[in-house]
Length: 231
Image 1 (cartoon, helix red, strand yellow):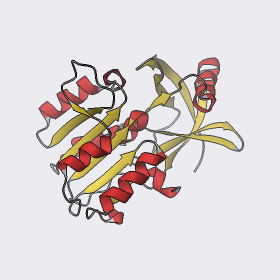
Image 2 (tube, one colour):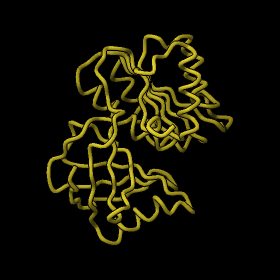
Image 3 (cartoon, helix red, strand yellow):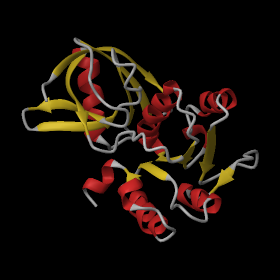
């Protein structure tokens, strides 16, 4: 796959530590919803970030980059983008993209892993396919769910879409689900035999999802996530 030059159209904060990056590529992109971009930092230094926009929206790249203090892996990428105003990318990476197999979809996101599920969700809702899809998005605090209002509106407009926000450390005014996101999914599903699951977040979370959900009937061929190429 060849490198594509991109202009940095904008970098705007989504939270105190997450930045929304908009890139304008020099050519129309070819990728599948759920695939990731590799940011070229050097000849042997390419850094992966999930593409947040859908595959039909292929004249731009949207990234949600979490760069908390001390995270130079992501921080250096943002610094390069701000300094140079352009970057080279390689798209179409990863095998955990949207499958059209007719099974109800469960999307599970931890933190900025949301961007992976957001691409899949938008592609699915745009397709006209009315297969039910549920997005569980987990974060430490409610303010970390930076697109919660938009997702709530999407769910109201699309009866086959359900949004379930999950907060680990909830304030007294939080009325939603609390705890770990995969526990919320398990509370809603006694059996996973007839669903497909897409997961993005920390590798530890992905491993627990695989272990716990397969014990409840999930078929490995219906479990998708980039982490599973490494664990």
